[in-house]
Image (cartoon, rainbow, N blue to C red; front, side, top):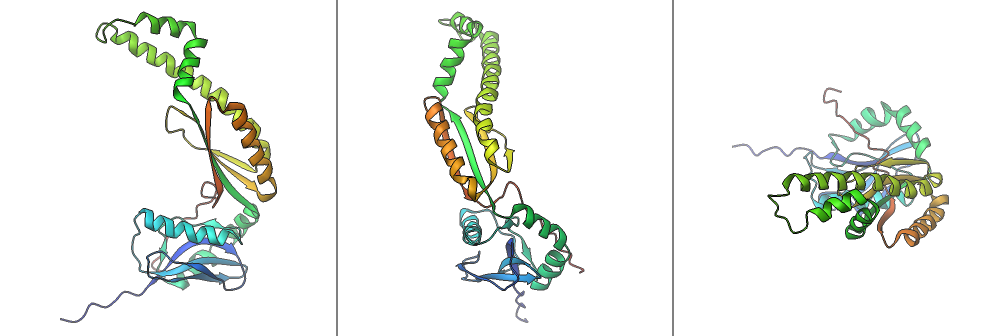
Length: 259
């Protein structure tokens, strides 16, 4: 039987940068083959790529780390427009023709908008017992209902317990709105854009991404420190960055196989 013909490598795509010259980077490409990370260029834009089999990459920690390490290296020197994880083009010509040339105006405009900006992420969480005690102390109707259930069986108080849970939930929502506004009103004036992502636990108050210039990052750091000092008995902050602007730019590249 004839040997199976090996499929030629494609180009794994990481991000778009502004560069008229060919660039090469230190980190190796995704796939653990030691592939060089370099660029495909058109005019003043470039796509950062590495050779790769034309396969679907699963979002394992190893693959995600390889992708992220390339982005983090590139963003030390360049404003980057991230490309969706796992994007592989069949050829260098496809990258140049279908992305850099076909979408040049769009990408050039995005580069201008994002120039000098990067992303910071902030999550804020209540200390759960502290917030529950606040709600009980501040809301007499909830306190009376809670006290009325003491010493009674779960079956006997089934509907009252549901009602208590609903009332506590509403009180937590109101308190979350209040506390998140304290936090966000302090930070919004320091940033270019804010995206609020969904809070994913009852304890979470804020799950936000901020687009900020390097010149304002010190002011932002100081504001976080001040908020932490002000709210540290009730709130825990988790602050990350700078990171690639995933929440603000995520280029999706659809291959036209007939092109």
